[in-house]
Image (cartoon, rainbow, N blue to C red; front, side):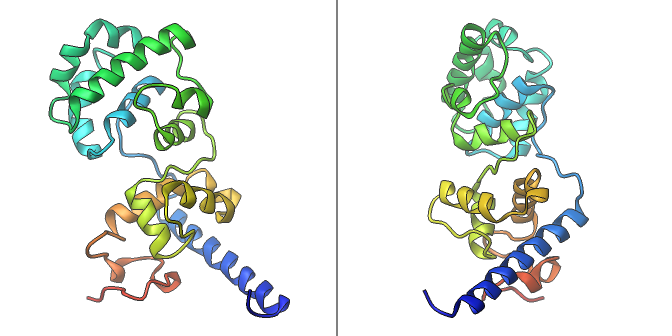
Length: 224
């Protein structure tokens, strides 16, 4: 560890102030962010997030536009059946495996959770096709928990700015939970995902349009 206790303390305070300003600006631009997946209740949200793995939100929404009106509960999804579900989501990548998972998770929701989407991470992750990121999205959006769902966009942004550098999504998640001010934590992952999707893009970020460019420490910023 380098530096004196005073200089280390000053750096920590500066880092905290920088991170707070980053989220203050993102919040000012988009006070009420939301995920871009369409859903009508916690069950359809869970299904949409399961379907979104390695697929775009736009593609998932296109498929669920005709799915959710006829299958918005576990019972209706089971009644629809795996074959008909495959037909409705066949434009989505990995649709066969996803259809199998959605039918089985619907069956388990009925059998184990009285047809309700569970409100704990452990129970959510016990369902087919549900990993940590999916559980975090559902806990955040459906139940208002202060979770961080790390997708490829958020992972890139957190490491690039940086906010909470990490080699794995879970490391980034833990880091962000530690540094994001509590009053911004509810919507933090939405702001970062949208920032990565539309401004801090992978190949050519739009740094000249970035509202936090002066707070970003990435040395390879793009120019006009």
